[in-house]
Structures are given as C-alpha cells and as structure tokens.
Amino acid sequence: AQSVTQPDIHITVSEGASLELRCNYSYGATPYLFWYVQSPGQGLQLLLKYFSGDTLVQGIKGFEAEFKRSQSSFNLRKPSVHWSDAAEYFCAVGPLNGNKLVFGAGTILRVKS
Amino acid sequence: DSGVTQTPKHLITATGQRVTLRCSPRSGDLSVYWYQQSLDQGLQFLIQYYNGEERAKGNILERFSAQQFPDLHSELNLSSLELGDSALYFCASSVAGGALETQYFGPGTRLLVL
View 1 (cartoon, chains in turn green, cyan):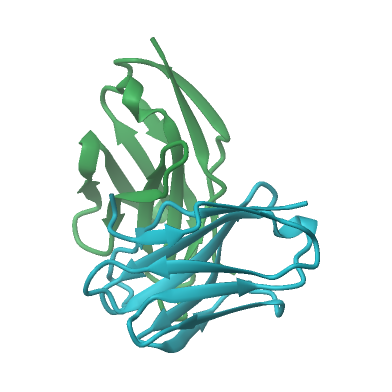
View 2 (view 1 turned 180 degrees about the vertical axis):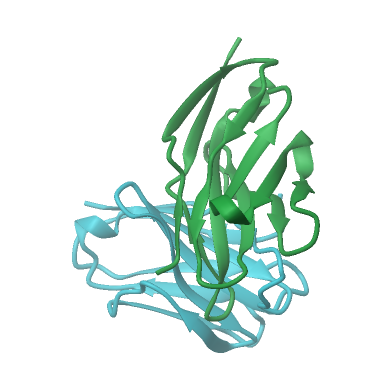
C-alpha cells in the first residue's frame, strides 16, 4: 500500500540554522511527491513538487527538496531558517485513483531565536 | 490566500446531528477534493469531484456524502455525527483533477462534536 513516513514529529532549529525534514515513501510506480506547509489556523500551501526530471527541485520561500529513488526519500531542506518558517510540514505522494494524495503525519517545526 | 473559500470556519454541534460544509473552488477550477484532518488519523483524503461527477473516493464514511453543483461549489454532508468526527475538514481545488496538477487548499472548517 502507498504510504508516507515522516519520522520526526517535532524539530527545533535556531533561526539562521539549516533545516532538513525527512520524508520516506512507499509507492508502486514512479511517484509524484509534494511538500505542503500549514501555518497555525491556515490551510495547506504547496511548497514544491516533483514529477520527473531533475531530482533537486526548488520551491517557494527558499525551500528545496531532493528526490532519491534508491532511498525512497524526498527530504525538504532550507539553508537558513527564519522565524516565520515555524509551521507544520507535510510530505505527500500521489497520484492514486484520480488525483488522491496520501499525506505523512507531518513534522512540526519550531524556530528558536 | 489560495482562492478556495470554505464556510463556516467553525461549527459546534451535538452527537447525532447533521451538518453541511460548503466549499467554493478557485475561479476556473473544475475539480474539488475533501480531506479530513484529525489528531489520530492525520490528513486523509475523503472524496474528489470533477465537474459535478465523483472521480475518486477515499476513506469516506457512509454517514458522509458530498456533491458538486453546476456552479462548481461543493458541499460535504456529515450525518449522525459522532464525537470522533471532530476534525478539521479541508477542501481543495485544481483545474481539471489531473495527477500533475497542484491542489490549492482552503482554510478549513473546524468541526467540534459535543
């Protein structure tokens, strides 16, 4: 069955430090992979997506992610975190019958000053 | 602002009741999706519509139903509510419901069943 694992429930980083959020997926075919961010009280916003081609994808707000097929991973990175990045981050895989996405459990990012 | 609107923002009701959640997709989007976000189940896909027709179904209970109207807005009906139905319900939309498309999420409706 298709699934997404985000091993870290909470992560705390200092402002200005680098960030890596982990995502591992299980999918029977070539996956489409997504990272979404959810700020408190807000809906989900797409940060970036991977469909094919270059395995390093750039997104909004200075985020990037690298698809590694051999490791079934799609980790999200940012070189320098800002306090406004504090939010919950979701990795998702698709498509499944239609355009269904399967989401990971999310990683809550806390940024300390 | 994603352009997807959802009403109401908050809903408090009692067990056994029925509620209707409403979603208006982004202008021009033909496909609507419903997701449920709860503490124990996480974010789960419920159902997808495209131009008024059901396209995909996920973990949607039989007590729940949805439809998409000719003006493309969608409603999610939840009946015989139980405490466990308390959750944040998101609507998302995309242009044509294809696999390559970005889904744009609304702010959600927070349902509390007492």
